[in-house]
Image (cartoon, rainbow, N blue to C red; front, side, top):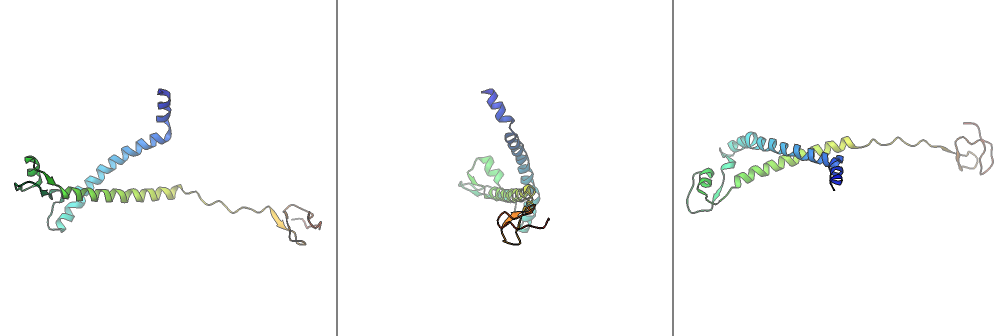
Length: 147
């Protein structure tokens, strides 16, 4: 069983998948930082100085001035601002992956094969198809000029 597992793990597809998952996880962290640290602050500024990560709906009877205060008190909240950040993260990751897959597909396409060279010609007397090197037509027995 160990030998089968080792053969499975050492196949190229499994190693490629593992590398892809590791790189994807690191890429996700980069995109999350891009969204929360670079994109959302200017969008929040344009939207009236809103910090999206602080947007929440308090589900308790007590009022809290911030999401951190509500979390510290253990109050139930709907954190829709964090959800907006997560949706923006997803859209950016999906767009980048889409572009990368499209570019990779372009690189993987095989060039079209050259047109096939014909090995036949038409007999000028009976118009039947004969080999290019033929000196006599097998159908009408006419002698042909050398090519």
